[in-house]
Length: 253
Image (tube, rainbow, N blue to C red; front, side, top):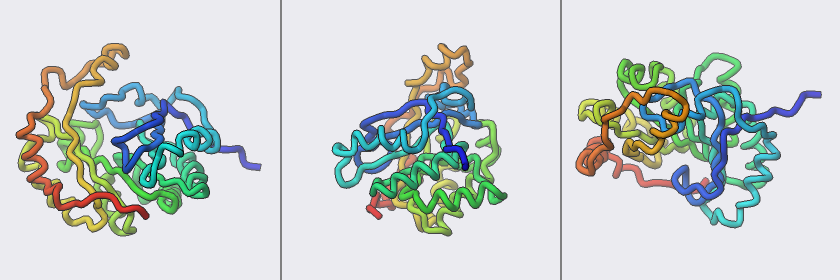
């Protein structure tokens, strides 16, 4: 008999309002291989630690808050990088769909590969995923490596694959002065996303410094020290160049 899959959960949020449509029960999984300079959750990086959950335990906790979700809410799994624990996600989302719960995956796509066994597992996960929040951190390959520690070819490949399978997606892009906030990059990213027919929404997330204290507590050097959040003018400029108004938002499945 196979043992039940266990997930390492960093934390949960009972009434999330910015991680998908409606009010959501948000789970932040433990572990991420990227080292994004602007990350506000460096405490999720380690692939060890976290709280052990079975998929049923996590669903039971989520369902306690179901009366508050309304018609658009549900559950979101974020991170860290949740795709590092894809077997747990499959079982959790499968249970959610059995209970009629809307499921959202929040990912940057870094673990994606068309190689097996990952690709078949990812295909299985998509059967139970209603919406993907897809974080494209940088459109330029080399700049992506400088920003995150990794190249982005497989990440852009996943964006194309999600389009091929007609998986509903919200694109997210963090606007960081001196990193992503250059017109040439924004135009290039806007052109790339415009070719994807499955994008329902395109969000610009302004860089902030709310997680700096975590770096200090963990003894990690904060590499964006001295860089302030973008001005409203730059945020408006990014929205214009990315053509975010062309994407009309969420439709329930």
